[in-house]
Amino acid sequence: MGLRGPTLMEDFHFREKMTHFDHERIPERIVHARGVGAHGHFQLYESLEAYTKADFLTNPSKKTPVFVRFSTVQGSKGSNDTVRDVRGFATKFYTDEGNYDLVGNNMPVFFIQDAIKFPDFVHAVKPEPHNDIPQGASAHDTFWDFVAHNPESTHMVMWQMSDRAIPRSLRMMEGFGVHTFRLINKEGKAHFVKFHWKPTLGVHSLVWDEAQRIAGKNPDFHRQDLYEAIEKGDYPEWELGLQLIPEEDEHAFDFDILDPTKLWPEEEVPVKLVGKMTLNKNVDNFFAETEQVAFHPGHVVPGIDFSNDPLLQGRLFSYTDTQLSRLGGPNFHQIPINQPVCPFHNNQRDGMHQMQIHRGQTSYHPNGLNNNQPATVQAEQGGYEHYQEKIDGHKIRGRSKSFLNFYSQAKLFYNSMNPIEKQHIKDAFCFEVGKCKSDMVKANVIALLNHVDRQLAKEVANMIGAPLPKENHEINSDAKSPALSMSNTIFKADSKNVAILLNGDPSVSLLSEWIQAFVQHRMNYSIIDNKIHQFNDSIKVTDTYTTADSALFDAVLVFSSESVIQPPVLEFAETTFKHFKPIAYVLSDPHALDNSKIKLDGAGIYNLTNTSIESFIEGIAQGRFWNR
Image (cartoon, rainbow, N blue to C red; front, side, top):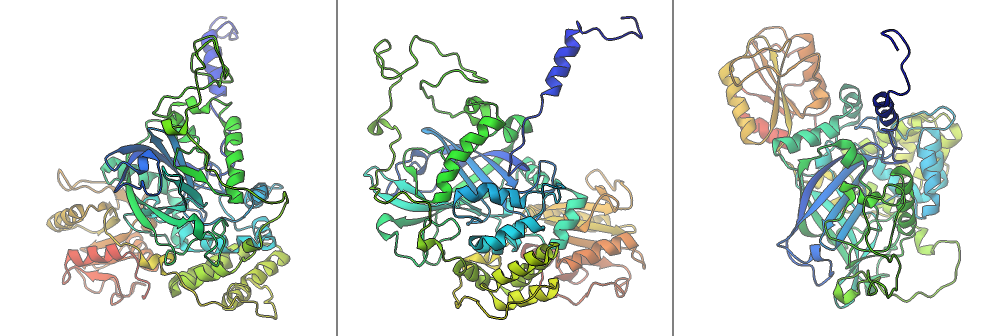
């Protein structure tokens, strides 16, 4: 009323706008809250009809739409991308037979064997309840206390302390279905199966100091990397791999194939590459798609079924339950991102957020008023039929003795690492367990490591001031699986980021030559100087030393026309050297870097006055030079 009077509550424009605003947020996911998604498609190489009747796995001519969400586990929606953590890798296939969700991680095993422990695990790894610290980190007492009292976690924490937990890019990490599933063909023959995603760019990681720097310089590093790659047309690709075991060979191995804390060594059960997934479209709206997408390991299609993996069985309940809470009711499958591309009819009615207008008199089965429609579709007509297996046993709460081998595959993983990877695992344990305040927790973790590798336990104990057990309980095994080491991956220069550092006035012709070479190799480049300016219509400075950081790039090229290297340029280059990344340089004064921390005769250092730009690009493809 009046220009300075109170707002009347009859102002329905205000009320409607504010009411909507006040309800714009939904509960974040309990785990995997921080995520990013993209659309794409999957296409099969050759029919898998010998193993499954799933249509999208038997028709090589068909492109199946997919939506993929990558995520971290521990942190909230606002946490950093480059924390040490497991990464979620969930894929929704929109098949002609319904949606199939492959809900996995970037590590092939998990912390626990039984789903009843999942709330305890999450409570332990999440920020501690008395002070809500730490965010986006497992380096605290409650997590390591849980691990020490649940030795089944040993294998998984070896992965978590490895470089797999700090990926260079979401485009450069593997994905795993974790659990054992079944494939069933038209004849009813079943195979146990584990699913793999193999990135065509190879599997690559950050170093720990680099990951920490990025967290401060660009907390959205991974999601920005994925978004920009797709926008530029550098579409991320993964090959789908299957490990297959005939049902009759279920007990033919020295590990239980149903144990989610165990992997199937690729040397014993080879991975068969069967198709390729390409992500080629970013979301139009983050909330409507990435935030509202609902994955569920129980979303399967004919030809894919479950095993008796106890953790999987628990997840089949939990995922539906959590979507009811997070997305406000049982109709979350009607949200556009969750809708199947095939029509479906059933008698499920009403509920919160019902979007469909169901017509007709009947909503039950069987019925006579509507000719018994909708009717259950029989298997021979394409309906889903559960695999028929004989069940015989006693109802007990317990675990098979075959699940009690907690240390053999932790040892296998550690044995399979090269010396650099082992050093990084040791350093990670020193950081993570060293952050714990409780001497008891530290001692218990060392006792756990003493079962895996005595020397590892000794070195970590020495660093964190914890006692080493008097007796050596290291498991006696020299078994290795070369497939587990990241040193045996694919190395490419494609989509790598190069920083061109200017110290003085550059040669524009040289800049043009370098840029052309980078573009030909599908690489990205940034020109960095003290301020933003332009040399010609096609070459301009894109970043300054204030906005850029060496941790955000895969390699550095220093161009200096002056005898003294400016401190920001020198720090940039020296940090690149510290992180073992390739460095190229052109100096008007050949002694300008003599007093720097960069060893000019070291591996991965290229003087472009007598070395070709192609040699530098080959070094960028190699990635890191650990032998400096």
